[in-house]
Each structure stands twice: as structure tokens, then as C-alpha cells.
Amino acid sequence: MTNIAKISALASAPPDTSGVWDDLVQQDRAHRRVYTDDSIFAREMDNIFAATWVYLAHESEIPEPNDFKLSWIGLREVIVARDEDGLVHAFSNRCSHRGASVCREHQGNAADFTCPYHGWRFDNRGQLFGIPGKSAYGPKFKSRDMNLARPAQLGSYKGFVFATLNPDAPPLLQHLGNAARYLDAWIDHNGGPENLCLAGAHRFRLACNWKMVWDNAGDGYHVPFSHQSLLVMTNDRYGGGDMAYFADADRSRMSNNALDNGHTVIDQRPEMHGESAWRQQRPQPGREPYEEHVAATYGEQAQRVLDTTVGAGMNLNIFPNLALIGNQVQVVQPLAVAATGVHWYATRRRDADAEVNTMRLRTQEDFPVMGEMDDASNFEECQRGLTNSPEDEWVDMSRHYETGKDLPAEEGIVRGPVTTDLHMRNYYAEW
Ligand code: FES
Ligand code: FE
Image 1 (cartoon, rainbow, N blue to C red):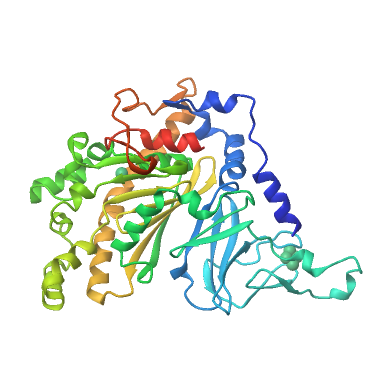
Image 2: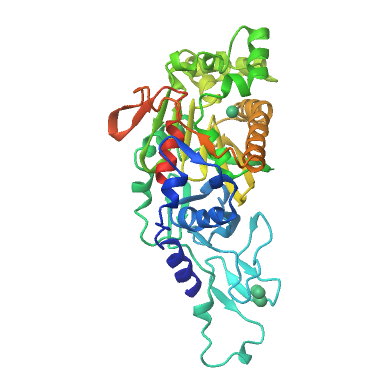
């Protein structure tokens, strides 16, 4: 597949080593240009998104034969499809004829795809099988050379499907590294791989660079300031509650952890799940009858069921585009240097009854609805600041850089106070 070879060659091309990258990203600060420069964004699409493993989809989104959904490797659009034998494939949504998008639906069920432009037909493995007026092509034309391009590698970890355009990328498990055990814990909190299902997504588009969203994904510093109204309201009305432990965050038992290959995790579990995460939640519609239902249905297991209804207590960030927050899956989609798509997927459990899944959804509505807009506003304001005041060149990421509190822990993890900028320093080292 010729176009794959081209993409792969581009993806694995050595980065520009003229020294500019080292100047732009230093140990404790990053230059504004990495957030505002079109040419750097274009390089990121090749040297990061095409070169490393990128999250595409969860298998529960395409459960049936012939199900498909659209996804992205940076700007490159791909179709993720399950064939009639149940195997998952990914292939480019760029027609091998003249380049039109072959599929224009977000998701659906189709055994094949017909390009709307000249009617070329591809099966759901991406193979070309139908060309109108084929006899007009000469003897040198080979249909097999015109299949839709496939990523160099496709892999699934417990239902999470990743791909890379880089044939030389290490195996997926090696790429996940010590993030895999946090991912295991997150999946187990949500019922295990056989029960976790992605439900619908809340999608929005922000006027900021994708790294604004990523910087925040491991930021334990902003919570009492950015989300002040939420915390104050919770405290005034209910005397504490969810996330109140961020008020004096560095003295809390939470931690911020640098994992392999630019991945990170904020571990809130020692505070959030220290006693009962359920009891710390803000009020949710239907909470009292739900508690009664769980007590009547699950008996001695009731408290455990209640505590799994709420978030896993982790902000797990798999560089460069997958963040697991609470019980939700967030996907970061770069669109342009100052435009980013953010997709928040709710999750449900196959093994849970309707009441449990309804209450999970009520909990998942709580923070994105009331809190994410605080963050989104800050991302766009940061982008405006970096764009409009070019003489102020630097973005700071020096918090706890010099305090000696980011310390080696088990399995190669570096662990720091929850407000450390270790998250940014760690992913920028990979960047
Ligand atoms: Fe797809 Fe012509 S561009 S068939
Ligand atoms: Fe936030």
C-alpha cells in the first residue's frame, strides 16, 4: 500500500535536530511558539501523532459485526471497523482514487463503503473490490495496490484500541509501560474488560492548542482556583465533599506520578476512596431512592457497589490523546494549532442494572457539566495570551522542579506532590 509507506517514512523521519527543539522546550519552561506556531503543529502531527501509539476507539463502541466508527491519528482520519468475523481493523478514510473521504458518518454498521465521488467500493477491511468502468484501466493498474491505507501497527489492550503509523514503534504493551497497571486498576473499578462499555460522548471544540488540554490533564494545582465556585458551593451547602481535599493539596495524600513514555497519573484514591467516595459526592438527582435500591439488591455488597458508581479516583493520561478521568474517557483531538476537539465518553457496565448505570451517569454529569467549562475557559484564555503578547515568550512548568520532592518510587515511577508540574515536564521530555 503505497500511501502507507509514504506516511510511515514521514512518521519515522528524524526530527529536526538543528537545536531549535531544545531551545523551545527546556527543563522548566516551554516557549509560546510550541502552542502558536503552525509549522510546529504540522511537525507534531508527523513526529508525535504519526510516530507513536494513538488511542482510536474502545471495542465496545463497535460491538457487532460490521459496526464502524470514525477516529483520528492526529489530523488523519481513520475508520475503525469490525468485520463479519469479529476482527477489528483500522484504515484510512482517504479514498485511494483522488482522496475524498470514503465514509461521512460518525459511526454505523456497514459491510462495505462506497466513495461518494466516483463510486469505488471498499470492504470493511479497507480492501478495494469494486471500480465502476474498470475495463478503462490498463494492464498495469492493480486493484490490490489501491486498498485503503492501513496503520503500520494496530493493537488492543483490554478493549482499548490503539494504532501507530510507525512500523518501528515498540509493541503497544511496551509503549504503555508502567501506565498499564493504572489502566488495569481503572478498568477493574469499572467492572473489568468484559463489562466496561463506552456510552455516548459529549463533544466540544475549543479555540486552543491541544497541549493546553493536555497540560491541564495532570495539573493538580488549579483545582481550588479554577473550580472555586464548585468547591465553595459544595462546602457551603454540604460542609465539604468531593474534591474538598484539593484545598491544601500538597499536604493531602494524593500524588502526581510520572510514568513511562510521557504518561502520567494523578492518584486521588488515598483521599477520594480513603473512606467512602460515594459519601463525598455532591447531591445527585435520584440519589436517595438509588441508595435504597442498592441496599435492597446488593445486601452486604451495597457499600462496594455505591463506591464503584463514582469515579475511580485517577486522572490517568496516556500520551498523547487518551485521558481517563473519574469514570469517563476523554479523547483529545488536535484540529489546528489553535483548535482542539475534546470528546468526553460516559461509561456504563454490562453487569450492572439500570439503576446503577443511571446513577453512574448522574455522577459523570456532575464534573464535566459543572467543572469542565471552567477549564475550557482557561485553555482559551491561555491561547489568547500566548498569541497576543508575543514578547512574553515562556510558559512556566517549574513548580516543584527545585524542591526535591519529585522522588523515584516503584517500577521506575517518579512521584511528587499533587501540584507538581512533573506531568508537563514528563510529557515534554517525550514530546
Ligand atoms: Fe473516491 Fe474517486 S475519490 S472514487
Ligand atoms: Fe480542572
